[in-house]
Image (cartoon, rainbow, N blue to C red; front, side, top):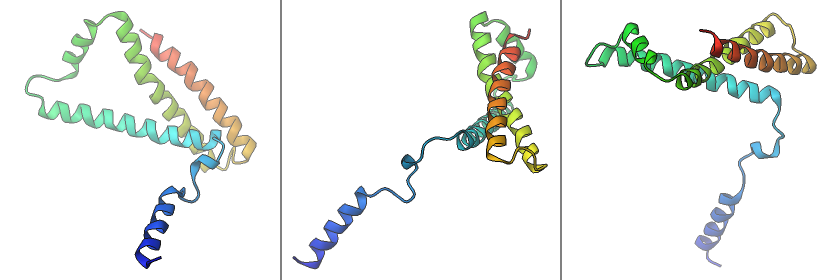
Amino acid sequence: MPPSASVEILNKQRLNRPSSPHFTIYQPQLTWLGSIANRVTGAGLSALLYGFSIAYLVAPGTFDSAHVVEYIATLPESVKYAGKAILAAPFAFHSLNGLRHLGWDLVKFITVKGAYVSGYVVIAASAVSTVVLTLWK
């Protein structure tokens, strides 16, 4: 077998290997799911803030808060509630999970049990906060 053929076979075998360590071998855990969700919600809220700010700067017409409120007032109630829930959920989770991280900075809840209990508390409090913020008039 020529050396080029063996190199080609080796390269094909390498394509089928998972990178090490591959995340599919791990069972999902609350600790890293919460961490990923915190990063995603933070990025989403940042994108929303910067997107609104850029739109405010480059919009050809008037794009201030009074006009946004006027536009939202014309929407159906179901759309308003859905929009509020979509905004409230990441805001509530990111804020409450941030408090959880501040607790870790104070060396609180740093055991495995403490991390799980505080994670479940954040999820429950986020759900309650989302409902309250969504239904608040």
